[in-house]
Length: 233
Length: 217
Image 1: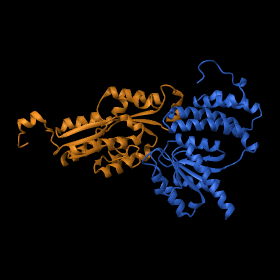
Image 2: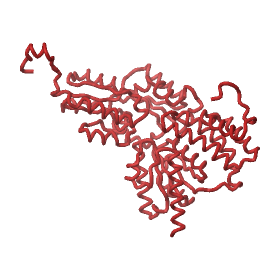
Image 3: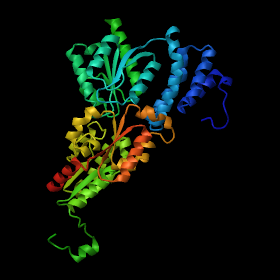
Image 4: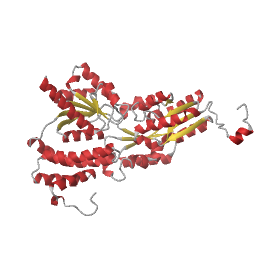
């Protein structure tokens, strides 16, 4: 987007810089994002404010354009990579600067499936939204999910699958949780290209999330409800 | 045809002489066209027509359902039987549901890699091959158009490991014996940074499925 002349990020006002960072995220420019984050830190911005306003704000635009068919997987990956660069700087600073914590999530791709692009995007956007995310990776048998739930006691379990052949395994995990009497202790969110809302309902998940932005909104919504239940109970 | 149409009919209104009876239409993915045409030719199936939809629909699986629906609906009155030569192809059961609704059959299996190898054999191996990336004859020929460019690797080669980092091996499922394609497939594996395996499958379950439909019609 910056094809006329070089832009000196440090010479921009805060508002202009955030706007430029949104453009740079859109264009997948990792180094520029890292530079922008450092400039805002030097100017005294709280890490959480940088995360939400400059990074998550920019990625929300990317997500919207992906949903609308304007951007495609490669562009989203580049943008995610740029955001990751910024997150890498901010993450160690977030806890020590009192960033709000929305909740926690264990997330992983199911057994037999090695696809993790969607899962990684969800993890990143959830972290950006203030969730603590434990990513257990790919090809997870039910035991891995149960161990992670036991160890981390998250609010949410997220499962991902890209293949028609592997998505039924989500039901194996949920059924096992039911058998063990722990299903209702967690909000179960599922996602992946071949899934749909009907499938999510049929396997007993709380919600199907069509993309990372929807996953974040759904997670926030469920956690809010959970907290409200706590208040009224 | 028993009765010849009258000259007046032919002069004034014309006549559709295409026979609907005992004609089979295959509505298939473009990626299967060569294999299906080879089978039609080899078996002398003169009562079969083939309509191929663009192979690139696979990049947006929900469009497969829409386009198959459209093609079946458009042709249902002109054929005694229509067979959909798409496997589930990432539609998550939606294509199967649509075919059931339309009253047509489709080929079994999750995708063409499975039915080319034989669904039973593929399923048996599946657990050991979760890190395999498959190419067929068509996909080897169309590697750049179907894999390299849509994945953005022509513009951003640095994405390769983000996209293919969890894969270990490229398996070329060959439908034909063609040394040039084997060489090309090997190069594809190198470009993706994967090990290479050449596996001749022939037409697998596709052949039997078409035989069954040809006989039925």
